Image (cartoon, rainbow, N blue to C red; front, top):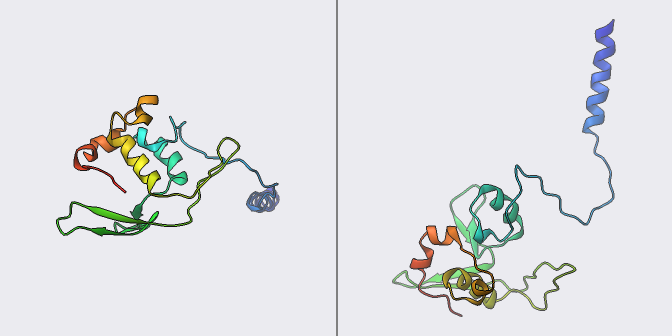
Length: 154
């Protein structure tokens, strides 16, 4: 007799566990991770924990198609490569907005100046960002990008 009482109880408990809980919408982002990220400026860090936490809030010029190795447009809508394969010209997506919050309200859309800032702060040790906030960009340097990229221009 006991198994028949236990079984319906287990089924009822299982059904209740699968019932979605209705909550008021939150204005906070909750991110569950195996550890605490050191920061969200992914260029400064190399651990999987940091990358996993920062990846959802950053966009790239180009990225891999999901589950593939095919490079597809992202912030760049397309790009041209010079015949000698040394110069890449990226055509940027228009109308891209930055996130805003109580401490930062963007006054303009994403543009080429943002790409210049991002690359040049990693490329040049005397860049104002690195003078004000001394840091390193280990992935950028370990991939040799500091030596392979001659310049980033608009």
